[in-house]
Image 1 (cartoon, rainbow, N blue to C red):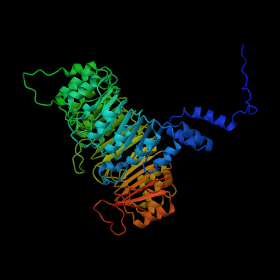
Image 2: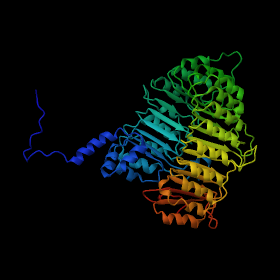
Image 3: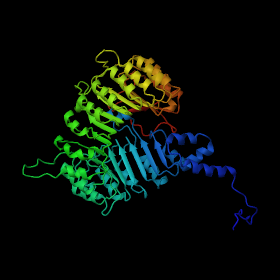
Image 4: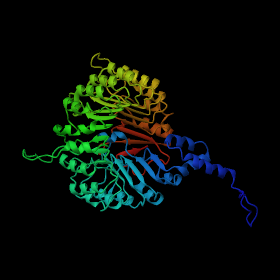
Length: 588
């Protein structure tokens, strides 16, 4: 039997084992590979210098919550073995046209640096970033790249998509969600290489330009691993049928327009759409319905029993039309819909979908003075029937404290509660009281709440509740709310986990802003627009917190009026103010 002996001494002298610190660091690197949550990794990196180095060496997935919070150079000097990266750019209010389009968030400096340091990059997710066709061209040079997800991005067009299709040879995922894609009159679908592809997910639902359907059909046919397919509105229901026949193994399907491309003559026999859905036994997620003809909804009945996600947020359907579908959807966990289904539709959802975890109800008519179709009646029904609910976004025109309080009691597992009463300063429409008690009950009874968006008539009393009970709240969105600076002080002094604070059209001024001096370094950002801030107050914050970037934003055509600040955007940064600020942005 052979014994394990230490290595013989070298000719230059006796054998010397590695120093204990090096051994411990090697062991630590192996242990840290089992940490997957960003929160855990960030905590590990703060233990000591050796843990800091080991964590950096083993991190393969990187999340940048603000592209201006750190320079690309600093990121790539510390993390050298990244294979997956997520970068966020503009704040969320950019989605509501509250930020000039050329404010910034350019991807170019990031991809330029990545081209030298992250050659092994495989996955990239960008949100609210300006991405050019040239950026995509440079990204195509990464030899191992396989997943591209762009959410709410702009700056590129179909010629950029042609680069992605033709040059990303190992592409598995192309996911375009709510992007503004320019029509360069390029047939980008035809640019995918011939032969079998690696595609697993293809989503171009947001691309408004027509596509070459025959090329898409051939692409689907030669993509045996394709599980997710979401074509745009230019795919008719007849063409959808042909795609489904080619890919019966699909699990996530966007239906395109869900209407015929032209009027079918009476003598023409349409395909059996129901049989195509019936053949897709693995289908669990259904979306699209961009230009829906409700008469075709019965074709989806065969898959409804297995659906866990259903998105009707583009489908202008009635309560009766929804009920014909939803009555089969007992496994549904995620449901997005327009308020055209009325309270009766939500009552049907509550009666059927007992496992629902996420609900979003969007307005068909988003004007403030429109007559909403859903109310406290629908919200109350959901709270009683869907007690596993964890996230809700609810647009309506009228609400009561009683309904919101009932939701807080019936759905204590809520993590996200976003209620948008679309008129300004609207009280409880029954009692005419402010909505303070309703929102107060949400933060008091929902112990897991991390995201809250408010609306309606709110006084400082509601903000006192937020500060008293919202100890886990990380994201808070406020609009047309509060009486005085005291309200915001309650929040800034009472919510220790607050990361993102968005405020618009509220009576908060310099005193309220100063009350958060102790906390701003711990936050990702603060956005305030159309409040009562002055240039002097903002300058005081910039002077006292030198590592905080304080941006004052005026519209492109607007001039600074007196001392008034139209929009304030503050965020922490390791590398100071950015160098690409446009003329309408003043950095203090």
